[in-house]
Length: 243
Image 1 (cartoon, helix red, strand yellow):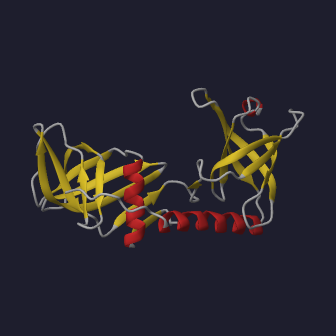
Image 2: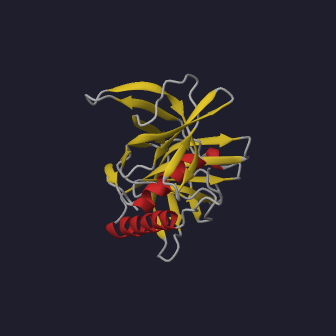
């Protein structure tokens, strides 16, 4: 679901999806105590260890120092893939193990979801295999890559070919994208970055669309929305609850 640059998320399913994503990606969380006057005091860096939907609480990793108390109102901030995530919640329990104090909180009823990008960009990663054909006048044969993320503003593609990095930064190339259930999108792309991941054996290219037609923008936006809706609706529930 495409969000505005600064949105308040109150839908429980969407909140669950955001929390699950933070846990899966081991997002570092900046945790602060909320004082009575509304000011905050840093407590430490933590991450989500477990989400209990049955008990409506979240278990967090312990701090290096134990300065958190039960029933304390805390503010949590995280940044993931260009998105800033903020929410307030209350500490519900403290659990001591090996001289460390882990803490649990209630699942928030609201999350502030602030995206720095002007357009919402959805990640496909390896869940989809949507091909993109890139044509650079300086390379004899068209190159094929797969979408990693996409928005109406631009696209990020990855490929195992060793020729992708031969496309120069700021080059304007022809691009053909075949999104599911829609007509192909043929457009110009200005290359912003190319880089290699030697460990994974992949090359990556990021670019900005040039002069998309209103119909092309509509098709991309519709695809982005459908992917995000599907992601929210298929959030997996934990198989085992934390006791």
